[in-house]
Length: 457
Image (cartoon, rainbow, N blue to C red; front, side, top):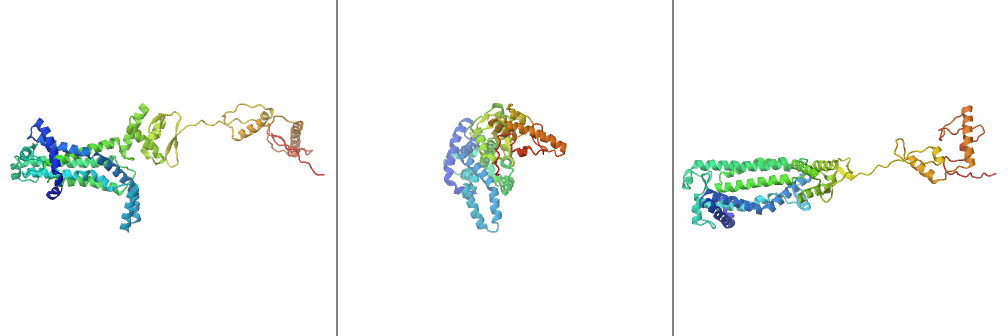
């Protein structure tokens, strides 16, 4: 550990300078030799570092979600080239390049903190060894050695012997009790943060090896921190406990306000958003508009939680717009597709079919208003339009033919050769005794008559 701390010794001067500046501030309130002054200086150092690392944290979130999205494709590549590791690595790098994903981005906050962590370790270790370092001179060194946090010296460790602890003005019992409690709290905060991420902010619809690795790390990391924690000075434990608590709170904020799509946290967030939108009829701020805009833009790629949200808005008479706003839409209709997706469209009034008219009504020219009564068919529309456009008059030959048809029908009934034909009475023709039937007259049913072709004699 001393070798690693010495490697980061270039940053010990800036770290020691920041601690001294905060110590001068808190020392004026609590006293320069108290554990509160030095302990709060370390806590303030952590907060300052984590505020500077917020852009990296945002990048870590995006990288983690991108890796979760790529897990199915990565699994396909592994199965396709399982016997060719070189080709597998090439395809993986190609996939990362095409999607703009960097696997190391998820580790950026930890990597960026490591120089400050080891620099602080080097500073506190020098205080325990009674060595000046950075801007910490002999006066500040003596003040730091007198500082105790709940009875444990700032530079003491769990593995220190009685002589070392007594030289710092404390007992081995106080040191081990305080360090053990801090190590347990540090491990529990790390476990809770990782567990919260895995149970609430992971897309449960995708089962990949990446999720199994994250579950394994959820149990491995706390054990690693506990093992290495017994070799950390109390000041370093304060630093690491503070950064774990910050990470836990930061993670809770992200899960509450910007959850991973498809996760349980997204379902809870959309439920809260739905209640607010239905109560007020609009979104509250730019973040909510961005969420609604992203859901609308997905179209058929929406997950179950997002489809439920859009469907709920439609049932409440609201429609999500492409710009993220929500407007009232009394005619909004939810259309269910075969693949399970839903889209919201504006309802159009049903087209009413005209009432079918009898032949006697069409011949007499009396046209009733069209209505949507039962029994109407689509064929009546074309019949009505054709009859309205044609002249509604019959010639004498047409009238005589109709009477002849009736006579032929009665004669056919007496002779036993009846046949069904369309008309106002439902039976209008048949074979007649004198051979004059409607089929022989060359007349067309209900419309302009076709002239007979002359016969050659």
